[in-house]
Each structure stands twice: as structure tokens, then as C-alpha cells.
Amino acid sequence: MAWALLCAKGALPQARDWHVEALQPVRGTRDIYGEDQRRHAHVIATARDTASSYGFDEWITPIFEDTRVFARTLGDTSDVVTKEMYTFADRGGDSVTLRPENTAGICRALVSNGLTQSLPQKVFYAGPMFRYERPQKGRYRQFHQIGAELIGAAEPLADAEIIALGWDILTRLGLAGEVVLELNTLGDAASRAAYRAALVAYFTDNVANLSEESQERLAKNPLRILDSKDAGDRALVAAAPVIGPYLTADAEAFYDGVREALGRFGVPFVENPRIVRGLDYYSHTAFEFVTTRLGAQGTVMAGGRYDGLVAEMGGPPTPAVGWAAGIERLSMLLAEPPAAARPVAVVPLGGAAEAACVDVLQSLRRAGIRAEMAYRGNMKKRMERANRIGARAAVILGEDELARGVAAVKDLAAGTQTEIALADLARHLAA
Ligand code: ATP
Ligand code: MG
Image (tube, rainbow, N blue to C red; front, side, top):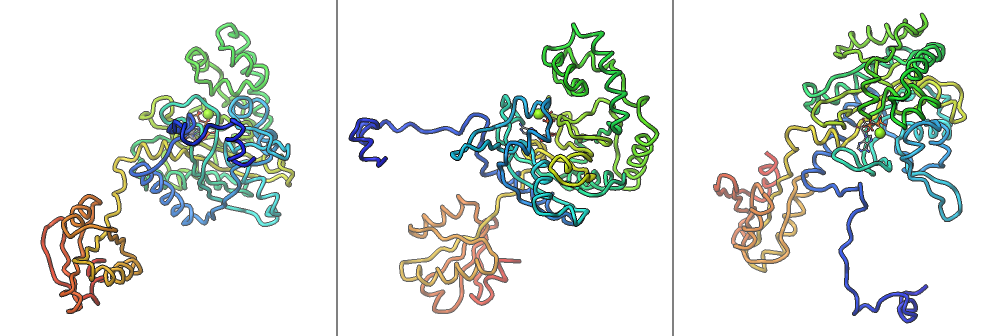
């Protein structure tokens, strides 16, 4: 209905009665700008570049999918599906879900685009994810992940390679000293069935001491109790059976292969038999890069092998391994925020010089130099502004300079001023 009509009917207040309330971002979401944005962009650029050197290509899939993409693949018992998904009916009545993670979407895309015929596929992605969680430091409702998936390779070398990619990204971010790689195996289906039985026996004996949530997990997916964040559960988990004795010979051999290959890639790790993934579709390798610096939000990068997922999407049985990392958590760990870009300020002296200055401004920009010119103000005001925006140099141009084809270039840190021929200006400022 037209706005005026709504107002006339009294459905909306008249403009003049309006108290305009400043709106806030939705709980658990945040605006990323300034230093935060520079950290965020640095994480993505570093990851993208490193992934490219490993032969990964970037895919951009939709941020919402048919709800079945997640309901099918994450399993009915994962926290993500049962409690955290943003699911709604769109205007056409279809159930859609804002992606809580991107592995399912990548596998859906692989199948939708017929790419199961051209394997392996090495996929990198970066983008927003959505989970309805209790917001706290390092935990948001819209957050961002980088991730890598290696689809179509069943060899332990693939697991080691994708972990090595993660390790190299963390190293290039300066975080090698901050994180520890914790490695585990979830074995194959037979190993997991035997292990599951042992866990059920153990937790059933101790059921009275389990949290209510884990009592539910005991019935549906006991392995997930190992991932519980409840303090009481964690005490029980510490004494729970580990998977080692239940591994089949095949699963044991696979795990040996991964550990050996990690050695070949030079990636240090510790083994932690408590590592399971929050999502249900993993087998064999499971790993996390963890830090002690972010409290309960200490997992910065997590992943594993998920050989069953592509088939769940309607594709042929296809082995795959991958990881995802939270950009916000990585950003918080960066020691130094990347420096803000420092422009060059073009400062015209007098109205007549201003028009000519636009040419100089544009020629600098086309030469790849970040250059700015204020929209108004005398020389003094413009110089003040140049300092305020952190300009590294001011290019000062009056009619006299223009007539002689030169500019006065003031180094704003050193305070020194030099005369430079306009023809040499871009080269001089780039140096
Ligand atoms: P957690 O145990 O912290 O809830 P998770 O097991 O749910 O993590 P994954 O699904 O494996 O996490 O996601 C991979 C990474 O994404 C995590 O290690 C973390 O860095 C990041 N991440 C997950 N959920 C959030 C969130 N709500 N806010 C910010 N980052 C998140
Ligand atoms: Mg979680």
C-alpha cells in the first residue's frame, strides 16, 4: 500500500510526529569497518593466496539453500540442525535456510553442476554463515568463515595436504606460535559402531551425572557427548573410552598414513582422542587448530574427512576432506592490525587551480596511488584535513606551479618539501 495512504488511514505516524529511533544491528551481528575490516580482509587475502598456491579455486555458493541441503547432511542430532539454524518459509512457501556452514553447499554445488565427473575438485571459499547461538566474544549469529574442501581423493595424502594448507595459512598470519594442531581419527563405519557401543556402555553407567542435553545425545548420537561444553560432562568425558582399541586394521592403516604424511609436510601435531566434529558426517581424520587465547572459543580452524556427504546430496559415493576457520577468531588473534592505507592529498591553491588538480588527482589514481582531494576549504583547512586522514604526502598546486608544470610535494612525516615535475609525479610518489 502506498505510504501516503497508510498515513491517511492512521496506520503510520505522520512524518512530523515521528520520533526517529536509531536502529541497532540485530543481536549477534556486527558491522565490520576500520581496523576490524582490515584484519578481516587480511585473513581472507592471505588464505585465498595460500589456497591458490595449493591449486585451490574459489567457489561462491548462495548464502541460503533449500533446507534439505542441511537437514539431510548435518544429521538430525547435530546442535546446528536442532537448535541453531535460521530456517524460514520464503514468500513462495519453500523452506529455505541461511547456511550455518558451507561444506554441504559446496557438495550440493558439485552435484548440481555435474562436477562429480571431474574430480578431484579443490575448492576454497570465504563468506558469511548464520547460527542462532548465544552471542559472546568470538561467537556471533552472523559470522564469517574461510574454508577449503578437497573432493574426490581418498588417500591419506589428501588429508595431510589440506591440513598443511591450513597450517601454512595460520603460519602466514603469524599464528604458528599461537595454535596447536590436535588430531584424531573417527575410524571407518565398523570402527565407529564398535566404539559407539563402548561409549554407550560407559555413559549409561554414568547417566545420572550427564547433563540433560547429553542424556539426549546418548540415545541419538553418543559420540557427540565428547564435544559437550558442559563442565560435568567434560569430567566424565575425560575418563571415557578412546577409539584406538576399536579401530579396524584398515582404519588404523589410514590413520598411520595421515600421521606419516603430516610428517612429510612438516606439520607439527598432537593427538587428542577427544576431538570429534560437531557435525555428523565425518569419518577417519578429525582435527582442530586450537588456541588458549580465546577461552571457550578456542577452536579457530576445524575439519575432517567426510566421505559420505556427496552421496547424501544425490551424487555418487565420493571421498572428501576439508576444514573451515572462523575469520572473527583469526582476526582477534592477529598481533598487529594491518596498517591503514595512507593516501596522498592533492591540495589546490586557489579556485583556478582546482580544475587542473582534478587531472592530477586522476592521473595519480590511474597510476595506482591512493589519492584524495577535499571538496572545499582554503589551503590551511585542506592541509589540516590531509593530516587528519593520515596522508603521507600533500601535492600542492597553485597557478604558478601549474604554469611551470611542477608540483610542490610535502612529505607530511618529515615536513620536507620538494618540487617535482608533473610528468614524474606518479613515479616519485610510488617510490
Ligand atoms: P564451537 O565448538 O566453537 O561451537 P563448532 O564446532 O560449532 O565450534 P564448526 O562448525 O567446526 O564449529 O565451524 C568451524 C569454525 O567456525 C570454528 O572453529 C570457529 O572458528 C568458527 N565458528 C563456528 N561457530 C561460530 C560462531 N557462532 N561465531 C564465530 N565463529 C564461529
Ligand atoms: Mg558450535
